[in-house]
Length: 110
Image (cartoon, rainbow, N blue to C red):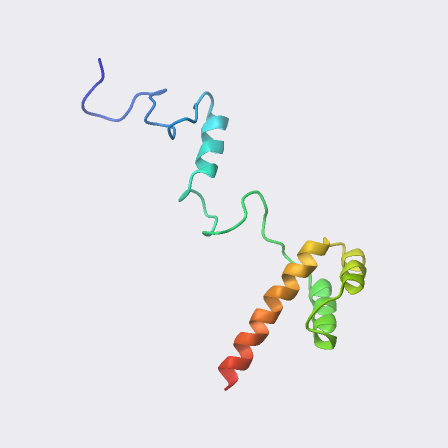
C-alpha cells in the first residue's frame, strides 16, 4: 500500500530518476549529475571536464601566437602544447574561441 500524501519514503522509486537504481548516496549523486538541470554546470558544457583556467604566462604566449597568425598550424599547436603544458585540443579550442572574440570585437567596432 502506497501513501497518498507526504514526502516519499527513503528508498522510494520517486527519489531517483527511472532506470537508475539509487543504492547509495554516491549512486544518487552520480545520477543527479547525469540528469539535465542539476548542478551549476552551464547548459551544453561537456560533462566531466572542468573549465581550464589559463595562467597569465599561458595567455601571454597564446595571444602572442594569435597576433602572428589567427589560424594555428599542427606544428605550432604541438609546440605551444609542450611549452605551455596544455593539451593540443585545449590550444585548438582556445584559438577557436579567440577567433570568435576577435570577430565580435571587429563587428562591434563597425
